[in-house]
Each structure stands twice: as structure tokens, then as C-alpha cells.
Length: 285
Image (tube, rainbow, N blue to C red; front, side):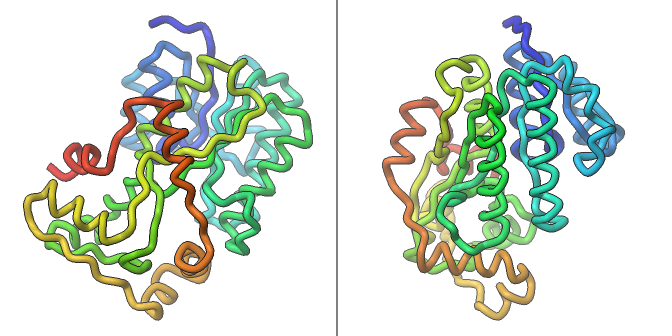
């Protein structure tokens, strides 16, 4: 399917950005992916899909500014791994350039809870970016994905699951919502294809709402072996995952309010997205 729109994508070698880039390319969009290393394995795989690789750095806007000029849209996602101050600066700078250069549609991937003043730095940071996007008059859509299924593919987590143990920093009855990164890519395609419908909207993205015991039970069913839940001790969570992630999991356990309506809305707006069961069958072969 041919499409005359070109989309500039950040995070293209990560879970979300990669899924967005692939799905856009498969639907005929022109796609430019910003990456610091155009020779990486993931970057080369994107190039095989006729995706243009832009060697640059979100911390250095002069390395990518020129590539925004002929982009119809921008998909913006940042990581907090190098600190929330860099994350905020990257997100605000990209949005500001998009506004200056006349971007027609700026799609920002935020996170569930960004608007709730959680006091978790890497959640509240996204609220700051959201507010900037809205204040400068940029034509925007904001999506707020929940926890990614792909977190179960973190090597030590996957290894434990295959050995029959799901170790998590939250309680067995604690509810979380989930979505596959690939489905964020599918949602992004629909949003860019239907800009007039989605401009100015903030959209939650969640396809499953499960407690931790139900997650373990789903793995047991699909893998045809018992997968037992075990809680990661608080001190281990704090020491090995760091203060910010510790605070996030504490917030999830004590204060987060997930709404099943968000799951129902996502399924209605973006049909045929993956359940956890289907995702496990695809990724735990």
C-alpha cells in the first residue's frame, strides 16, 4: 500500500520505536529512523525494510534538524536510562523543532500515569514533555502505553519463567495493565493514517489487565508447565533496580488506579491487538 507521508522516528532500535518504524514501512510510509549507530544489527535490519537511517543523537539537535524539514510527522519516544533531565530536554527540543519546522502531526509516546503526579521521576518527566507539547501549539497526539509484554523478555526474567518461576517486584494480587510493543506500532500507523481523527487527543493504550498471579497462570497455561509467582524482596528491588524503579513499583502497589475502561477503549479503537496468551505463544517458542 503506497503512502506519500514520511515519518521521522526516534527510538527506532528500541522496542517501541522499532515497532512503529516497521509497521509504518510495511504500510507504505516513508520512514526515517534516528540512530547513533547505523551499523548496529537492529539498524541494519531496519534498513532492509527500505527505512532511511539518520545517524544522529537526540542530545545534539543539529545532527537531525535537517531531516525534520521534509517529514510530515514525527514519532517521539525517549528513554530515561541516562537520567530524566536528558529525557526531558530531548523530548522538549524535538517538539520545539517540530513546531518551528511545521510538522503536521507529532505523535508522542508518554506513559500510563503521566498526569497523576506520581512523584516517580521517570513518569512525571513525561508529563513535563506532554505539557510543553500542548503549550507550544504543536499538532499532536499523545499515547500513554502501559507496561510492555517485552519486559518478560529481559534475559533474567525470561530465564526464570522457563525454569518455572516468575519473579516480580509487586505482589501476587497487584494489578497491572499490559500491551505489546508491536501493537503500539500498529496503533501509531492508524493514528498517522487518520490524523484528523486523532489530533489533539491523549489516548491510553492497554490490551490486558491482570494481577501477577494471573500473569503466572497464563504462562503456565501456554508453556504447559507450572510457573510459580515469587515476589522479589524489597531490599533486592531497591539495590538492583535502583531508587526510581523501586518507587515506581511501590506506587503501582499502593496508589495506582488502573481502569478496565482503558483496556476496553484500546480494544475498540485498535482491534486485533495481542492478548498476553497470544504474545507468549509468539515469543516463548
